[in-house]
Length: 88
Length: 133
Length: 174
Image (tube, rainbow over all chains, first blue to last red; front, side, top):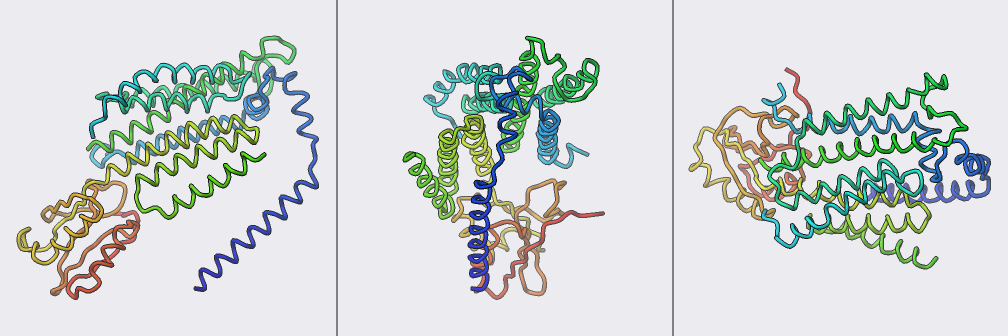
């Protein structure tokens, strides 16, 4: 019973915090970086799709490690699926 | 489990069209929504339909892993190539004023797409092989 | 403006169905449908890149992996570690195990005693249950993370000579 009441209180507090944070973000929004990318992405990178321009030119450092995450997870899955006598 | 004939023949008809759509998403990544990761996932679903076609062996696992490793190294090399031309790492190696700037995006999208597709296909193939015995 | 509200209500209905449904295959179909609905919500909120990835991964690849993982669980492997042979054990435990595996549509398989590892990555066989005998009491050892063990514990609550022990998952160092 106490666990249920605690979980309901936790959910209500999460709801209040998220709604307050979203109202705060709507009021204090700053459109500097948005205007910068909309103006300059085609000039700098030559891509009409803004998302590709950002993740392959401005943030290439991030997307390379994102590609390495998939490599590591594939090797982990293949290592776990082998039996004992096949690995050792 | 024995797959039905209707499902197998429908998958056999759909397979080349899904392949063409995936390559279109990859190559047109700089003009329309999409890119390497999305196109690679669509290519992986195209190979997923071969599971219903009652193929004996879906793919060679060592070959896929080798492709993924080599392509990851190629992506790293292309990203590091701007150290020679511009003097800074992890940007485009073409100069800002040239007209050929989309070539960099197309090559990186292509390599990332093939890498993601081979990774997802190898995950599916491992699960299928594990389920057989 | 109005279609997106309808889609959100549909998404909440699908998610409630996922939580309360007992059948595994129905659950996977609901999961695939909910990810399709969420992909169309992304499309209406002007992010088509995310919608493409969600359609390909959430509604095609992950349900196939779940289906393969469920269809793998068809056998219930039991290791008989007592001094009796397989015919003797039938009278006491076999009926309970048979009734238990009929509920989940599994195939019961009892093997003779040998040394097996119950947990860890490097085990040679995928063992579900080990039967041991100690002072007129049969001890059933199973993994703690398996959901099936809770049902087995419920079924053997009335019996005096059967005890269910749950082993905590972990690695062995030797």
